[in-house]
Length: 511
Image (cartoon, rainbow, N blue to C red; front, side, top):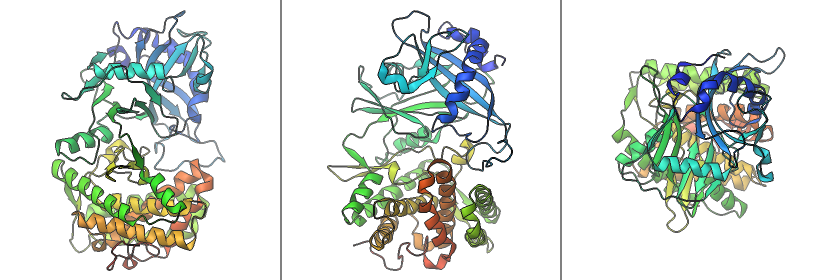
């Protein structure tokens, strides 16, 4: 475990522990080997960890022994993994690197203290048996409000610290002393709310390059699109000359106080059998406005036959890989593949389809509606975190976002206590139709004009959901499997998603 170039480049008076980085990592490795695979955001589940490589170490607060206050240590660590053991279920794309020898890089913020208050006991990683932190308790720092407050102060004052660079939008004013409230929901990243003013998202799995969750909101702010909270500050790695692109580590954005997320609003409506079509129609408007702004401020392209063939081939590869580890999917593969064949056929007559930057992981949980005005906003532009960063930054047809939202309405309808009953399925049909109508009214591509695209992207999303649920929430697997059965028997001429998809011929979205 030798010191890397990045570690050497960040060795400064503010980066005291990097000098003993090999001993530090050696002492932490046994603890991280046990702790990392238990985290929701760890992407390499099912493959043993064989070692670690330290990318950088920065001491944000002194970690010296005997201190009365906790120390704070920032690490970027690559987790090296082998293939799954013989006989174990083999991992499949899109989660985890395709090459078993590849190593994912994780951002770790570690608190260091001689003793912890009881409320932080769930965050404990362990006590190193040697090295510079010997005998002290090391824990995940993000559940600790005291240490989260330090991150806000760093973001308030732009500058460099060790291997990190803190940046702030020039005209933003960030108040000091805002109380930190770490969010406890398990996600692919970690978030902290400061007062009622800001929310900080900390990316756990990192890659070189500008994260879309910073890049796209910055572009939308330039375009004066008010549907997305504009970033106020962020932090990233500070690579030395010739060491590649910075890595986006965290983004601070306004916290939309008094807003409710679309997923909970949809479940509330289903619980009392209330109409949701007007809300869905307005959400379609918001989505189209965001797509229009992105197309106007970032480069666009067109997909011809070679590109459409490649997209269809990737969808087929994901289908085959997922069926390899989820046997329940196998009986439907042949019929699902027809959706991808129809997508490829779109380019055979010389036609081209526009592609642009999109949200990439759009669903009801990525939307917020204000209580007073009923105005929708879109959040979390990272895309599907399990997919490579280069893929997430690639221009794609905007209908991919639309298809993903259609899946989200179907998920909501099948997730409640009476999920899947006739009323809930009719709710989904009408709500999906209203969303598509609102999207077309606001200038987006009318879904009725691209049924092959819509079916292919909705099918690809359902396959992704099957893999996700099989790995993380097996009890939820029947939800995407219901969509698989429906899509397997639904030709594109029956509309996006087939029955009970939206009645797109003359549908007005009203209950």
